[in-house]
Length: 435
Figure 1 (cartoon, rainbow, N blue to C red):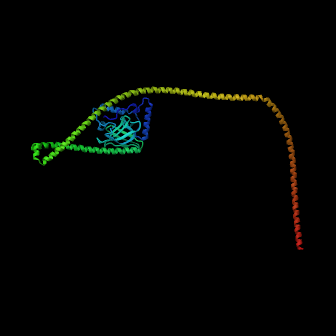
Figure 2: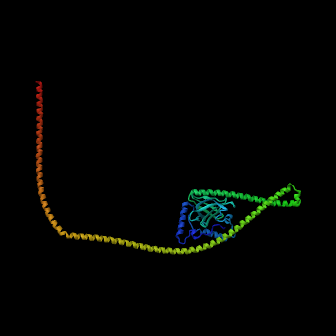
Figure 3: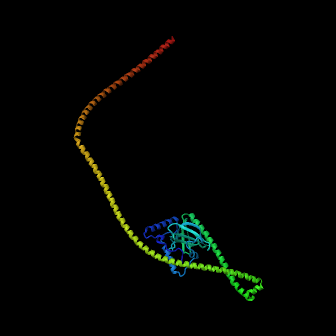
C-alpha cells in the first residue's frame, strides 16, 4: 500500500536529537500531554515514529502493484483551494497507533496542530487533513463505514482502512471534541448520501448500456427487414419514430460514456503519475532513513563521549566545591581564633592596668578597714544607747498604761457621782412641785 504523507521526517520532526536532551524533553512533554488528555492504553511512548516508516517501506517492496485510493493519490496533501475548501477547522494533538504492537499510541506531532475537514466539490468527497510544517500527518478520506469513537472526555479516534492505521486526536476541552465528533458524523452522512447517488448514476449508466446492447440487434433486424434509413423515412410510421428516439438516446449515452472514458483516462494518468511520485518519495525516504540511521549512530557515540566528559567535569567540580567548603571552614575558624586572641589580649591589658593600681588599692583598703572599725565601735555605742532608750520607752509605756487605767477608774467614779447629782436634782424638783 502506498500512502500520502508517510515520508520519514527529519530528526527534529520525529523528536530525535543526537544531543539527547531535547528529544527527551519532547518525549516527556508528549507523555504529559497524553496524561492530561486521558488517552487509553498509552503504556509506552515512542516519539521516533520510524517503525511506521519501515512498515510502509516493506509493504512497498513486497507488493507488486500499488493500490492507491483515489482521494489519497490523485489529490495533493495540501488541497488547492480552487477545488477543495475547508468546512471545519480545530486544533488538537495528533496520534497514530503503533504498527508493531497495535496497542500503543505514537505521537505524530510535538504540539497541537491544525486539523481540518475539506470538501472536494468536483469529486463530492470529504477528507480530514492535518499538516505539521512541511509534513502531512493526517490525510484521511471519510467513508460511510468509518466511525469516530470517544474514548475519554478529551480524546477520540477513528480507523482508516485505506491508510492501514488508526488516528487519535487529543483536544484541549470536551466541547471541542464534541464539535469534532458531530462534524464527523455530519460528513459521514454526506459521504454516504454521495455514495448512494453515485451508485444510482452507475446503475442508470449500466441500464443504458444494456438497453443499447439490446436495441442494436433490433435496429439491425429492422434495417434488414425494412431497408435503409431513407426507405424507413419514406415509409414512416410510429415504430420508426420510436426507433429514432431510442437511437438518439443511445447516441447521447454514447457521447456521455466517451466523455466519462476520457475523464477516467485522465484520472488514471494522474494516478499513475502520483504513483510514480510516491514510489520515488518512498525510495528517497528509505535512503533518508539509512542516512539518519548513520547520523544517529554517530551522534549517539558523540553524545556518549560528551556525557562521559560531563561526568568527569562534574566529579572535578564536586571535588573543587568540597575544597572550597573546607577552605571556607578553615577561614571561619581562623577568624574565630583571631577574635579570641584579641579578647585575650584585651583581658591581659586590663589585668596589667589592675596590677599597677594594686598598692594604692591596698592602702585604701587599710584606711577603709580602720574607718570600718571606728564605725563598728560607734555602732556598738549606738546600739547600747538604743537598748537604753527602748527600756525607757517601755517603762514610760507602762506608766502611761497605768495612768490610763487610773484615769478610766476616775472617769467611772465621776460618772457615778454625776448620776447621783442628777437623781438628787430630780428629787428636789419633784419636792418643789409637790409644795
